[in-house]
Image 1 (cartoon, rainbow, N blue to C red):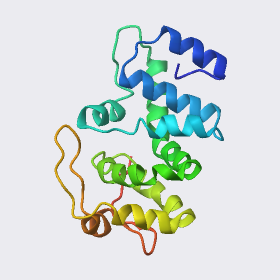
Image 2 (image 1 turned 120 degrees about the vertical axis):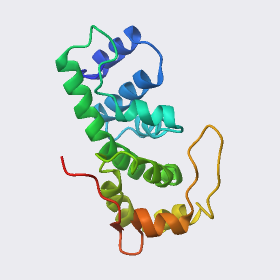
Image 3 (image 1 turned 180 degrees about the vertical axis):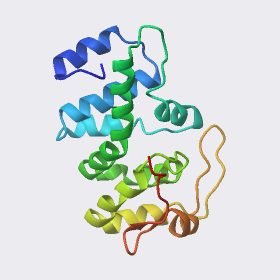
Image 4 (image 1 turned 135 degrees about the vertical axis):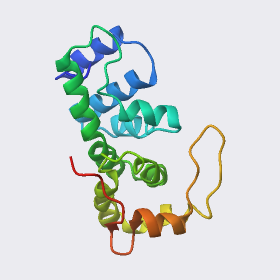
Length: 177
């Protein structure tokens, strides 16, 4: 699926794939990349932003070999997809702004991956949809603990550790490759 270059070949690949989170994420990401103006494809991708630590681990290890038949070429292609996901999530939320709260929340999670440039990508959303972006940060409130899911960060913590929404500038940066 990851190397599909048309919607038809992507659909054919989906028919052969298992139905786990990894496969759903790869399918949604490629579908969105092949049809970047499709709001349903954008929504499907945004709905697959990790909701728990297990899903985050899958996202950050897309390029790891999961089975013997995966070739080096497949793993390289998956690594490239993994690297593009922050950009894809960002352009998708600009297309489907009602998902901005989930997008902002995921910004606090993405910083756990030292290679992710998700927070850098957030500048675009902050600049294009500034009032909604600030509203999403404000909605984080005082933070709380949720079982099975990530901890909800407080809006104050987000503003002082992750991203300054007033200046639309990140405070957390990925490690250099």
